[in-house]
Amino acid sequence: MGKLVIVGTVAFDAIETPFGKTDKILGGAATFIGLSASNFNVDATLVSVVGGDFPQEYLDLLSNKNLDISGIEIVKEGKTFFWSGRYHNDMNTRDTLITELNTLADFKPVVPEDYKDAEVVMLGNLHPLVQSSILDQMKKRPKLTILDTMNFWMDNAWDDLINVIKRIDVITINDEEARQLTGEYSLVVAARKIHEMGPKYVVIKKGEHGALLFHNGEVFYAPALPLEEVFDPTGAGDTFAGGFAGYLAKTNDYSFDNMKNAVILGSTLASFCVEKFGTERMQNLTPREVEKRLLQFKQLTQFEIELT
Amino acid sequence: MGKLVIVGTVAFDAIETPFGKTDKILGGAATFIGLSASNFNVDATLVSVVGGDFPQEYLDLLSNKNLDISGIEIVKEGKTFFWSGRYHNDMNTRDTLITELNTLADFKPVVPEDYKDAEVVMLGNLHPLVQSSILDQMKKRPKLTILDTMNFWMDNAWDDLINVIKRIDVITINDEEARQLTGEYSLVVAARKIHEMGPKYVVIKKGEHGALLFHNGEVFYAPALPLEEVFDPTGAGDTFAGGFAGYLAKTNDYSFDNMKNAVILGSTLASFCVEKFGTERMQNLTPREVEKRLLQFKQLTQFEIELT
Image (cartoon, rainbow over all chains, first blue to last red; front, top):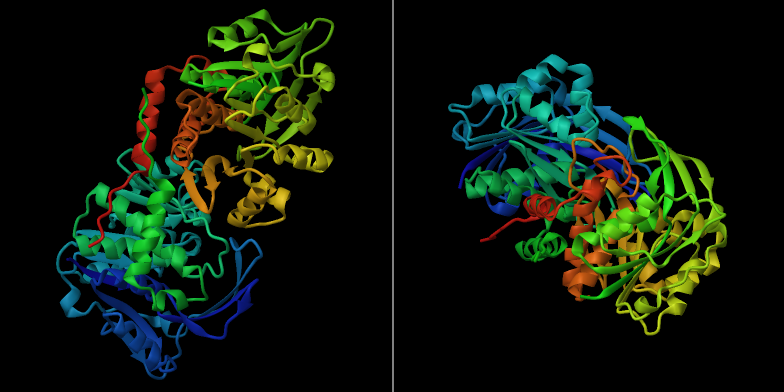
């Protein structure tokens, strides 16, 4: 088993979907990544920052999932990062209503000493310089560094983003972001251009249409489970990334074949995340439920053809 | 091996894509279905109509693929159905520029005597009454009837469409059509409603996002092969249907597990179709090329997870 460093936001979200709306609830990239990775009982730390307004109950919730929270800085006089958004009827697009950076504006992440030799580093969506500073703190090169990012940083911190992309092994971005990053419409061509920027592995997330894993001219496809309804997509991408990183850290096997398993497990976990608001579904997920759904993924994709 | 009846258009197409344009070339649903099914050396007949302007060379091309063309009526004084369309830059949407029904307007399909006991009937996109008349001519209930349709008939021949849908086993439609047919956005819910209309099997085609096969609460997913570029999508859906029907007729096994294989082979064949204009790529496809691409589909989707 490898150790896992997760950096990202631990935050308040307020979400509106066609099915209802929430007050401020637990959210943030590192939260979703951590909850997802915790399904593999991996030794993971969350590196983040919150304000004095952040409930102890939420911190306990993370601790109780065996996530190390010593890397979550608590700025007593500050306020926690807050995001609010409203999903459109198709659930594929959303408007951001509120973004309050608060303590995140001056976030200087510190990797706990015990985790500076971690095998896997998962850089959740944050300013690329913050992501870089995590890599700078590692005592040795991790076996695998994974980076998530979004179009905001392409618009506002291009050079910094390109610099951190050079340093990582796996990038996870969505289809539109892959197109923006490369100027290519074809995802196959976009993935090849991203390889040339540095990452040996490129994961392109297509939401309800699944995810593609590219490596060295090969491609693997993990579908999303077809669902009766998507209740709240918030955190699905981070949950995917957390499952991916968590499974790889647990198995300590970074081969392409094992990475295929990791994207399937990422999709499996993401399929739960969208069933309820925020982290609700992920808080009480059992190993039996995960196994059962993994079986559904097998039935969804596995076939036996004999051509004669 | 089962016999296969294919009904649909045999036509002229003129196509414009961002990569170029064609004059009038060979096209039509039955043409694409037949060429695709011919990869399984199945005993298939095409039931269609053309005008005196239809080149003997095109009829020979179909014959040379071991397709029976005795069911293609030639109306000497008439003209062949002609469709012209222009694809947008994303290749997912297109404008119809010209539709000349010509001989198709009075088409009364006649199933050749030798094929009235066929095991598989593939009803290509046509007026639902024409599709029904094929079923009326069969001497015994086929083991499998497959129907393709489109939104045009939902708008213009709703009752006739619902009546033929009641009589078939498998429907293949695209995602937007499934939504229009049922008024449901979720494809899982849409598939269930279509089951209730009659078909035990529902195939929903999602273009570059692959195809879903629904049956009895279960679902199987065949991705589309990620391609560097889609040169011309014309006929991809029919090629998918032809591979699906052809493989089932060849194996004469109509179980759900074998139907999974059939959608994979449908996707495999469709991935060739889009590589060149019209039927060009399908005319010279070799068994070796199909086998090689099937291997790519396996690499694209197959995984081995042991959860411990």
